[in-house]
Image (cartoon, rainbow, N blue to C red; front, side, top):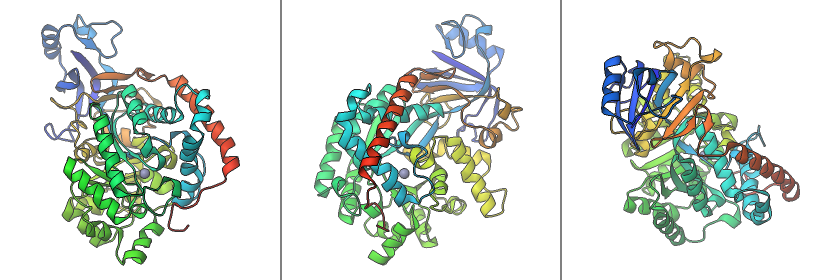
Length: 487
Ligand SMILES: [Zn+2]
């Protein structure tokens, strides 16, 4: 049995009330499951010591607890592990390059060159690294997530990455995070070498992946066509059918960029969501990333079909894509999660800063400080994405998976934190680096800031090497074309 106790606890659960803030709270968990959550007092400590032996206590310097003094109260706040509902694990080595350009140019100038480099130069660069270049890249992304307290994620495995599912599953196993891999596809408007030739082959690929990875309990595979713009109607219909048949989610980029959104009007005489609706792609298991540009009618379609949205404010602002009408979506009852997108377009995986930006942007835009309070955006990176992704996580309550983080409050930027302002401080004052403990599936994967499942130094050293080799490669190949409406 395992025990963690801290100065504050935020259960974020429907059963205890989402806004409940507990002073001196504890979580008791066994294997992958939470057994008890609540306010700590001496009588509870005595009962736990009497009933559960041996008892491991997070933060205790000895192996097992023997007395009440051993039930250490950590100077921090306990909350469920963050859930990232849209990201890309292949972008972590390309942070900070090709900035101040719109999405299409950024895809051509940064992402696609990097994925082509991994694909075409993989064998040549492999001897310089500990693992394959793909695995190195994905391990770095796992490191990023754990650093910021993200215990579950949906990874949109776009472009060439659709051929590298086994490496990402391997990275996730090693890290002991939880992952849904949305396997990409594209059959139009994209770099020719990566185009899928036949919807039937894409469906076959999904069948094979599903069979191959069904034995991994912390990882599942779903269809993730890259975007509406790059996937023709027959391919989208085939993948939606596959998702219906197998009872899985389906994930896609939607209406991220103004130009590609306009393209649908020219090509089909309808908007992106009208088009998606016309081919039967929308529904409660359909999760759209972005949905920046949308009309009132499109919002109605999303509402009627119970389609879900993942908002990525870091990427939407840095690429100048625009921002979706989040307050209106919420008012209409559309379920929305806040996420980071990939490290390449967001430049980091600091999901707390994504929550902050989501809120501050809408407050300023509508000149209304009451919009998207700290509590609401915290729910949008925990309990809300858990519901959207169908995970038994996102809150601290009995029976939920033991995905728990502790954020250290002993920092100048978080002092003073009290029961009355701890949620607000997490959103407005945290810099994301204060995640001291991360427990995923009952296993401690970050222990007093130390990574347990991953070798941080080795991964960072290899990613730096990879990045230097990419610089040399870029000098030879120039840029790629064929990823956007303005090609
Ligand atoms: Zn994305």
